[in-house]
Amino acid sequence: MADFFAEIEARQAEARLAFGRMLRLWRERNGWTQYTVADWGKEAGFPAISYGNHSANEQGKAVELRRPAFYQLADVNRRIAEQDWGRLKTQALKDKLKGATAIVDDDGSLWGPIELWSCYVGLRPVPTAFQPKPRPEAPSVALQEARALSQAWRELVSSAVDKRDLDAFEAVQEIARQAPLPLRKQLRTVLTSFGDYEPEQLKELWDGEWLPERWIQTWLETLPPTAGAAEPVSGQPEAIKTKGKGSRSKAKPTSASEF
Image (cartoon, rainbow, N blue to C red):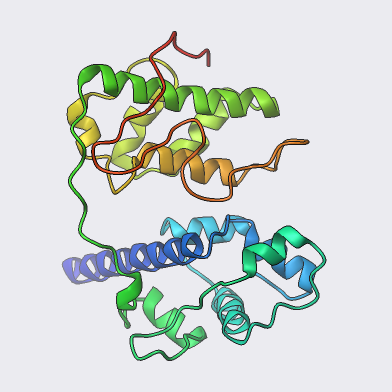
């Protein structure tokens, strides 16, 4: 009996991860940050899922999504399909919503709360268009390049910490929470300057982009914009530009950042 329930829990955890990856891909394809839906709801006057809840969902960390969350996500999906943007005043928000696409099934039918819930609990698969592609082969990275990447990621975090006067330790902890549990210790080690990634470790951290970059970018998107400075909307952080297989960070190894 214990094995039976353990198997059910494992399937549910897998379904939640798949559901979260779908939401993340949906958001990224629309060029949104994790604030976009919450900002849209606030400005247009409808209840929208909070950015914190949306972030937890994307990572499959939501312990148990409550019924209102599925209705809120479905309402956003419907509004996109009907181009029902509401009364928006912010031009930047209008630009983000322009051209957004909804989540639809393989037959083109729009997903509502029932479909979203069914996917979340594992009763319905993620639409083919939102299923993950096979992991691409990682680019070959030499030891010096691995150190350069590690240093560039440290500098990216250090810059954000300095600009916003954040607590460096808490910033590293927040970034580490974006990564799967087995990968957090090494990520903290790198970001706190106690070590660098080895080339062999980086092979497991490539998913068409470097996963540490993705985790840092996800964290950056949760921070409020600095005064007079525009935050990156999507894509790679400006400090590190990765264009595909075989690409390299332009940053050179320098002294370790202070944390």
